[in-house]
Image (cartoon, rainbow, N blue to C red):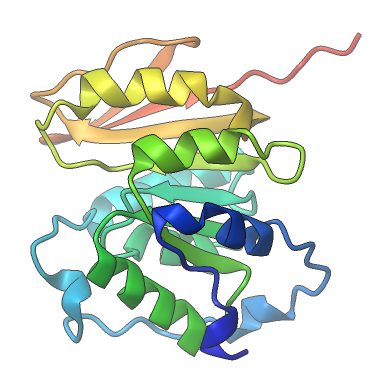
Length: 216
């Protein structure tokens, strides 16, 4: 698939990438096209704090136990794209990254394109505070089983991100989970649902589970 078809956009082109992201996909052969990541060869590794391999492994062990490894995955603050890539390796039906830095967003997109994963895996350049509400408005076309956020540590996101996610809660499928990675020095608050914290040294993964709707 050519790079022209890759679903990447600036924030003022939201309509274009949302239309691409909402494309119905019937073939699963793309999952066999995932290739090994090459580290240290792009701007993706500059001036970011990637989620460690230990934390990534712990995250997906928990998601696997909840049968969520195959669910559509939203990676906010994508950074290097390592978490999104692991989601694909673990069988996610689709992955959407959000990254505000233009160089990092382009680097993630190139890796997806080079691996032949578009439009199953895509990256949009934009501020989470603008992109997430727009995604929430498109819930009839696309919902996510996992929403993951790893914002810069101790930068006030513990206070500002959770209300934003609460306002966009409809973008998460019933039975899905929002995962907030943060420093142990920046406690997360409860919102809408109880918080389940998993502590790994200085890093905390806070899980917010969306309950299934009882239809009985």
